[in-house]
Length: 338
Image 1: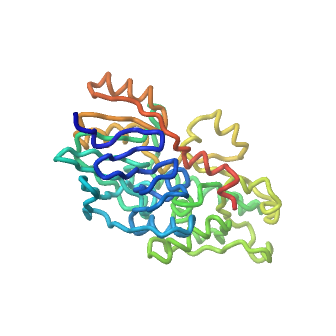
Image 2: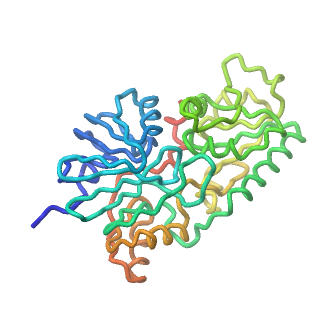
Image 3: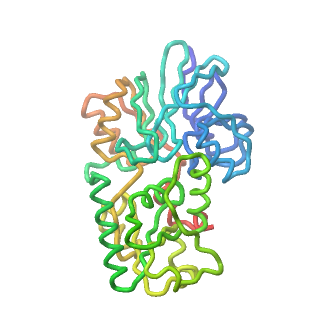
């Protein structure tokens, strides 16, 4: 009996025909990386393959060599042909298409369907089997259009400015932070950034993928020179002495999890904005339908509930366990605040 195109192992998703792993969570000889978030791009692998923008970010974060493969380019590895296709999650993020003997499997990585103006827009890829994330795989998760959320954030910032307060907005440093910055109205005031955010900004600017003006917060920061600013930072920085240098401030957090009242309360921030770089419920179902896949493997999120729903709709769906952590949760962890 022939090996499956992809199999699920203790190291991660494996392609036996090429002997490569996709976003492995334990060290492997060769890794194909969908995007540069820390739960997908981990240190310790023998070799890395990624899109050029993801490769640049991995070099910045891990200091390792990375082979590049552009979107749509095909690379023969052993008995498999692999290619990357836009996932729309963050700049450079990719789905991975693997073809062996005419059978095609696709690993979604993290993805969203709404264009954000920064990431390469999601591209449906026809396949026989689709391994899909389902971080927000419940019907309650439905996103507002980005323009509406931008209006809410700018109105919040303007009100804080008029009250003489700074606005501290928490978000993951790669992808979400740049997306939020691009949504801000710079006429309201200065846009300041934490070092973790500014590090990602610099890599993306060098690649021509981000052009918004920001002011990095340095040790000699003068609060009087930047009154009532918008400050974009990992939320883990909010309770630190770093945050107190801005004086009176209101805190906000931007995440799909803000859709849940209990999560908003536990975050301990004063304002939650519902915006995510992951697909919501309608987008997940649309993406799956557009692949035309016969087999669906939900992973990373509400896998059991989502697989059960897919089966009720006639899909052959099997949940798959994963060790991916979730970038929206990671935004609150100390590692992102470095």
